[in-house]
Image (cartoon, rainbow, N blue to C red; front, top):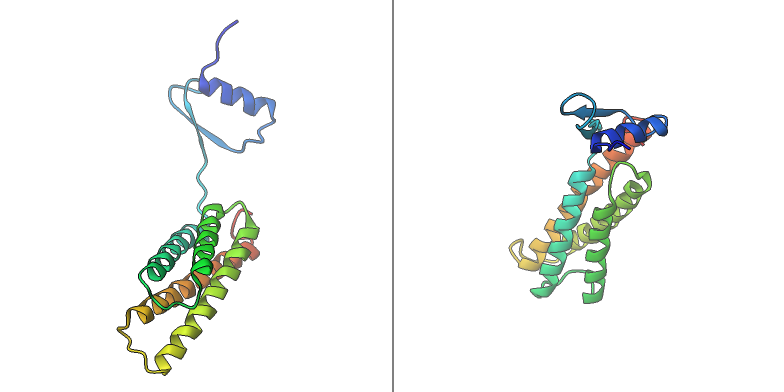
Length: 165
């Protein structure tokens, strides 16, 4: 019995499955012995990568703000739970799962309302714009607002069939 190279195994697998692995590009010497590389898709209006980063930055800011004594509108337990939810949502976010973008929308909308209203209320109450608690709250409000915009654009692209969902 002859041995198959890794590239040959992929070609054989694709032939046996009727090509369900999708369009593959084979690199290397000829068709066998090469490396299988999936075709890269350019997804219009997909901002999941940026949303992931903003969620992780928000989780980091929440933990740092609470641990340095900033007066944010969450309990210590609520802060840690929110940070965990943000990091898990960031970890799950990808273009293949449309439901996570709706979840991200809800998370971003809730964060915008919670931190946005708190920031406006505190500023109107006379809190200095340079108070470190206010700076954390304002930063979180703006990050969640930007995340809400990007998530909305992703959902819009998904609904208009601009993404491969």
